Amino acid sequence: MNQDRWVGIDIGGTSVKAGALGADGSTIEEANFDPEFARGPSHALDAIAREARRLGAQETLGVGVPGLLRRQDGYVLSSPNIKGFKDLPLRDELARRLGIAPSKVIVENDANAAALGEQWLGAGRGAGDLLMVTLGTGIGGGLILDGKLYAGAGLGGEVGHVVVDPLGPACGCGSRGCLETLASATAARRRSLAASLPTEKPGDLKLLCDRARSGHGPEKQLLFEIGRDLGRGLGPVICLLDVNLFVFGGGFSAALDTLEGGIRVGADERSYGGRGAHLQLVRATLGPAAGWIGAARPTVPGQRA
Ligand SMILES: [Zn+2]
Image (cartoon, rainbow, N blue to C red; front, side, top):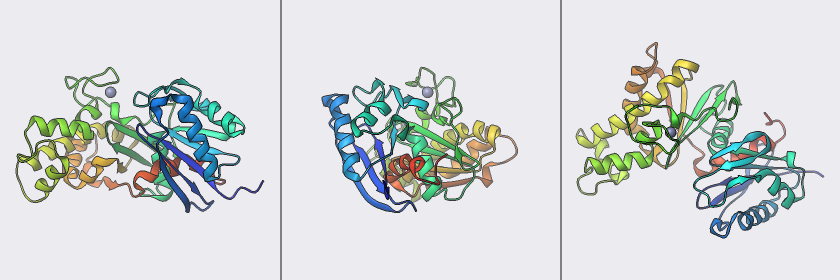
């Protein structure tokens, strides 16, 4: 069979993004659909397999999924935001529906997939080392070292659970004061509400950033503090790996220009060698497509890790 397109699927809590790529990484088609997770995993997997087939998946499929998974056999241990995605042999179930060998379905954590996408065709194009930091409901992380995804025993790169404040808010992971409890979009909203900022509409992050951009004031200070916490979370990564390029994705990355000063200060506080001023802090460029593109990447000839 002469395959001429490679399909990636990015499973999210409310919708699924998908698309087909040519061998050179060009986008042939993109789609966004609702697999109706509320009707149970079997129904949702039917819908996902149907869409993958429609997009042209013939022999291979790449899939990104949030949560805890066993990468080697694409088994979802738990994915708290997706109903029924618990103890689910995702790889095998999709392979069976598509009639292809299980080893031809490659399942990756969603943040890792986004890192693979950005390093291939986005803000990290051509970079050897980078950490992708996704600022959304939580904080996801995907680490690329020497041009390859590095996941260690499986959960490497999860910068969202680096402890920044041991006495800080309880985290969903069971720890306390993790980076994502202080600098995710959810955390930023909580902090802006607690500070009653911006005064016209507390909790509105877009307005908060607009105010911070237009001058000095409590809004600018709050975003500096959130940025500093973010930098403190990156400090241990810098100490251990001396990664210099950080690519920020997710909705709250729109605030990067207002967070940047704080990030550099926080990173300097928690790392050695005065790296803060030299860090490359950039926004992701593939937007919501990073996940499905990165999921497809390992199935594309010449891009296999
Ligand atoms: Zn945590």
